Length: 415
Image: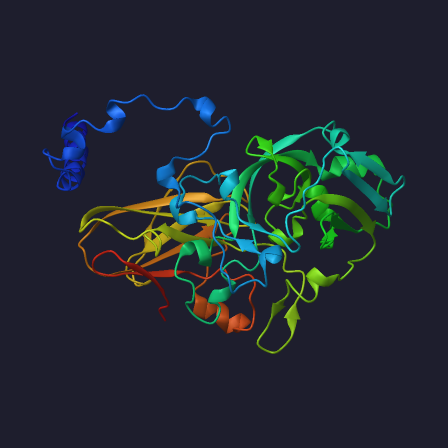
């Protein structure tokens, strides 16, 4: 009994200490609490002013952004998720990373069709409504561009995790398992691959092994409970869990079944890993274990002078769930196991936290994720030793943020 009481006192004392540390930043005479504010006195607008809900005007800075020099023009742009400003694991629909190659196609669902052809018993064409009559499922997955972090291969360049790691989002997809649709057409014995094709002007195509198509691919029509956004492939897109985002063909209009890969543009001239010896790795589909500290980070500096500080980040793996995340405050010399919080779904984002008392001095923040298959996120030097510096794809190395005195944060590298 005495041990129990002692432990209770210890926990109560620890909580009181943490509270005291936080209380030092609050003032009893703060006019923000002692004086009546306008919103305490005036009636607000009704919800009918904005029948489709929008964020507070005070969150107007939380938006997707692009890097102007990264793409040729607006019709081939990349818009990065502001992961430094988000919590949990679900990305709001209006903030989801998106990449398009010929502008956003505006597709009338009543006129849209999905064709299944090639090595099938019966070529078929479905309307969107007919697709929705198949058994549907809800699944939470991340989508990550293979080029996420690609500008960092040769050194620290982009000063913000929105730009270094923001080619990613995680949502709940509603759709139909692709295996049901293929079964309706009947795949011939010789069928080993599929070629999904988009309806936009770029005619996006990628070769996907039939085994993957039957395992967990979906034809999705909704995300986070509402219809796909136009930039996310409305009215239909392919979902390829754990594999690079370029394979998740948007505005899906056709799936051809074949006996070998097609080697089209997006899997030859792009989305291959150029090695230091001049050869390229092809078909590197799975997104490896990865993590990043989202706060503090360059776009989310520490704004208090010292004391209790919450470190937050995201981890993910295309091979399963996240088993553990370690964090370092000194550039990898010492590591502490972070606290994983929230749901843990295979091939989805995982949220982690680490609380510590900051003394106001400089820090070198790092995170290192380990997935359910035992894969460990590598240092950048270890990755470069194997892959060189010529690639722009599949960079899953450890990221370092330098916190300066005063709380400003910068993208740096350590040996």
